[in-house]
Length: 368
Image (tube, rainbow, N blue to C red; front, top):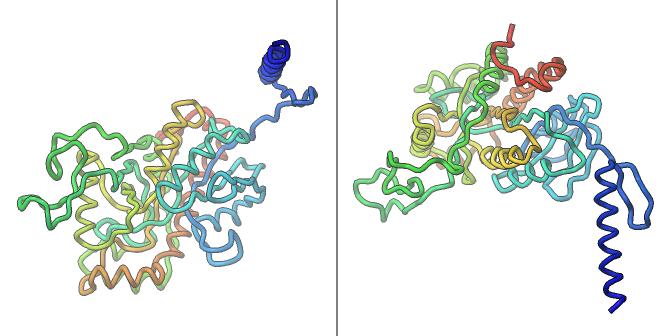
């Protein structure tokens, strides 16, 4: 009877010592030695990318490579509980991550970083910067769109069109509703997320007049879209919302659905412009982390740049165009450059004025 009691007391004493040590900014090791608590590294700016093509440097660039090379993200932090190791410039306070493709990867990576005790992210700004399909009704490949609304293209009910009621235009409809685009829809629980509109407007106003990189090769693709004036423009900066879906869809009919689905969930306030896979997952995790004070969700920005169009030009079928895109996106290089030059304009402005923007989120009124 004595030995078990002594064991309980010993464990209780050890627990108390550890808790006391933590409260005193020290850690008590199992051998009784006292070590100083390691303070988390303050992060000012997180660049969130989704994929890299090969190596992180020195070969064909994916979304991460330009940031790593040009921002000197040279300090590596192993990140085994996620998709890709983290890299940071400890002098500037910029941290770069690669989440992996799809909402499951992005949500998990964002949550893993937010809970990582090595970093203090309480004042960090987040820039989700990636390529996307872009609606030729709104913009051209190489263009950069700042999103305020993130719409999920997966959370829904679905009936195969061959079995749906004859008076339905689609078999895809919102959960807890009775028909497609039912006005009696529930409050969104992940179907639509809204970013801080003041920060989004600031980012757009700061960058809207930028001249974006243009490539001669882009013109060959742009000129095919004879019925879409915006698709024929040189790359430009705009405001435009993002639809995230795990299925890589393509075609005029799907593009019409994306516009209607975005309009439906934003109640006409949003405008579908870019199609990707990850942003609702990333922002959902950041929202949960905001609930426990780990991050500030009002400091999140989403910048998507057009690497390809979401529908084919006249005279080309959706299948033909999608299969051609699988061989490479016409606007890949331009979209990566646009994401970097537009994103760094925002990042540099925040970092240069860190004494102000550490505690105050910028608004358009700050632009002189």
